[in-house]
Each structure stands twice: as structure tokens, then as C-alpha cells.
Length: 163
Image (cartoon, rainbow, N blue to C red; front, side):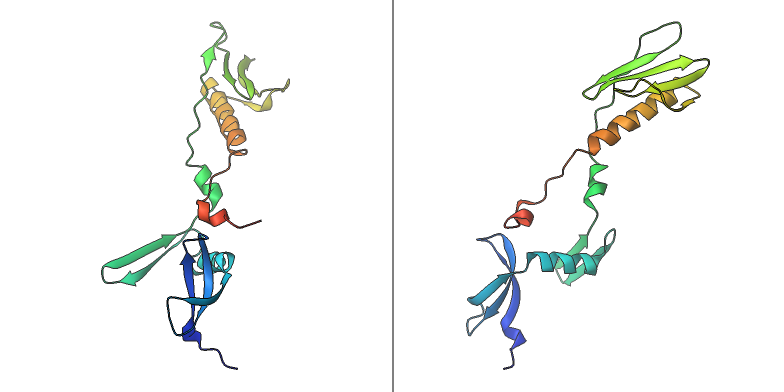
């Protein structure tokens, strides 16, 4: 039995907030049956657009642009409060910064600036030429650790019904 493809369409269901594949009868506004097509639709959309690219479509007064990027890229946009470094030894210039992860410490050891990460007794890396470089490395470590535990919320309809 041949299926009339003109009677099958993809629709957004406001009731379930899902994208569905629907089969219609005589009335093009009343679906005879539906099935969830959210994941299929989104996978095809990613294939169509491509991550990191844009696609333009539409006509007349309705022009659209779709662009996709990885969620991890959105994490880079999250602003992390900078560490507040303070010099605790005026002679050596050693500094520290308190954080929710613990204390970051920068010390001058024989002309080389060493960075001590929270909870570690030994310095990280081989050292830095300036205190600013060591503090920047501490800030980078802090931001990396904070971003590693962040979750970005998706649009509510994307996760609805997924289990």
C-alpha cells in the first residue's frame, strides 16, 4: 500500500513541547497519528547546518539564519570572577588568592616564580619569569576547574520527555 507523502508532516506540538512526525487525513490540521521526532529532527538539523557554521533559509520577509555551536564553546562565554591576588610579603613579593577551591600561592624561589595550587604541597610546572605570569597561570587553573563543573541549561523543550 502506497503512502501519500503529502499527508505526512513534521510539526511542533505546543502541548508536549516536542517535535513530532504526523500523518494527516482529509483535514491537514488534524493528525491521525503522531510519533516523537525530536531527536531525529535535531540530528538532521546538526547534519544540515554543521557545527560552527550557519545556514540561511526562507524567502520574502521571512529570512532566517541557523547557526550551531558546541555547548562547551558556550562555557567559554561564562564570566568567572577573577581571583583577588594580594601580596603578603613586601620583601619577596609573594602573593596569594583565596578561592572556593582553596588558596592559590605564588612564591619567588631563587628568582623563579612558583605557583602552588590549592591542596598541593609542590609547585606546579617549572616556574615563571614574573609574578604576573604565575598569577595568570593560577587564574587559568581556577577558571578551568570552575568550568569543568558547570552545566549550561538547554531550552526546556529540548529535554522534556527524554529519559
